[in-house]
Amino acid sequence: MPRLRDITPRGLYARSLLLILAPVLLILGLMIWYYYSSHIAEINRKLGQGLARDAGLIRDACLNPDYGPADLDRIQGLIETQFTCTLPADAVPVSSLRTEFPYNDILRSELITRLGEGALIGRSAGDSRLHVRFPAGTETAEMILDRKRALMINAHFLIVWVIFFSLLLVALSIGFLNQQVRSILRLSEAARAFGRGRDLPDFRPSGATEVRDAARALIDMKARLTAFADQRTAMLAGVSHDLRTPLTRLKLTLALMEDNPDITAAKADLDDMAMMLDEYLAFARGEEGDEPGIVDLGNMVREVCAGFGPHVPVTGPVRMDVPGRPLALKRAVTNLVSNALKYAATARVTLISGPHWAEVMVDDDGPGIPPERYEDAFRPFSRLDDARSQNASGSGLGLTLARDTARVHGGDVRLSPSPLGGLRATLRLPH
Image (cartoon, rainbow, N blue to C red; front, top):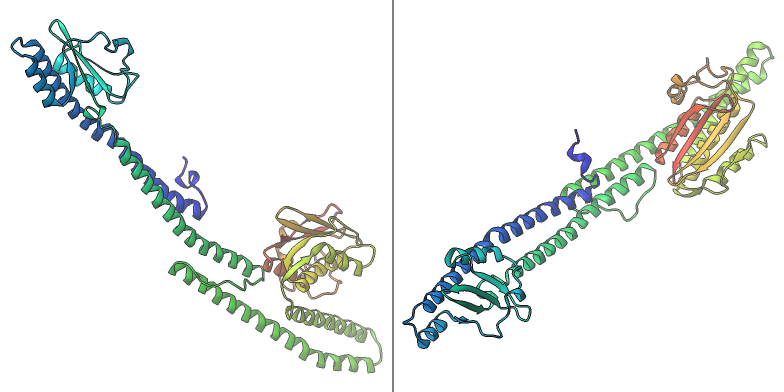
């Protein structure tokens, strides 16, 4: 069963415009229908009845032998209508009269009721006056009168004025609606920009009170999230920095000890810890001073892959511009490529530039991950030892940070089976 929302516009502006236009058009249509079908028809019926009474008076005068020319002149002056009881030779033939015009049926019905079936009403082609002919005994009488005596000829003026003021009302409503919808669209644009890590310098609350409240709530939320992210970054940088001192002492102590399998394993663990701390520090430093702008994603991906050597081929467009933070995007691409090479011997990168999205697909020929565990791979510090090599080093934050970066920029990172037999990681970003 079709629902109302399935046949109505989905946009706020279109729905608001429909909310304004639908009642105006409905009321205007009903008013025009009533005005012409009832009110004007009733007025023309009254005019037709008056015309029929005048015609009856003329017929009675033509049939009365006691009426002389003076009496006929008096009747003609009384009804202010030109008439004759005997048609002149140059009278308009019946075949030349136009009998089709608005409300002709109403006038004809009143004349027939009063004068009988022989009554005829029509318009001549040469002028706009009405000719009313009816039998008067052995003669034929004719009345010639202006249309305004029998028809309400200026009825359309009211409709023209009503339509004019309706259009004026609609124009004013659309102007007001534009102001309100513009504020909502601006709020939507700001929310989308904030979600992608960008700012709108000239954004300020505007519009209705409710829209202003929503805009202020959005600005407050962004300020709180920014403060939280800065605090998290500062804490991560501080903890990572503080841990480097005892880690260095431990490495120095192990270096002074004689080598044995346990000492060698401990040194390897310390190297892994140092690498993790370097990743944390790099992440913390990357958040600072990374201003948003237009990034050439195609050139960035080729630079990152060149750093891993010639065995990571890149295919696709040479240039792909996306809005975002260059250091954060470069770190996300680096994490995806390094994650592929960590568990596979071969990796391949494909660039795709669509009308709305730019994609970076990283394929490898490693062991892959079962589809039911794709989401587990994005959990922080997740290693998925049964699917990937458990001897590989790393912090377990590569895919997590890559997806967080993509989602901050309005995109996402998705996993799927690779044509090479391993795993495909797709970084998708809006243009």
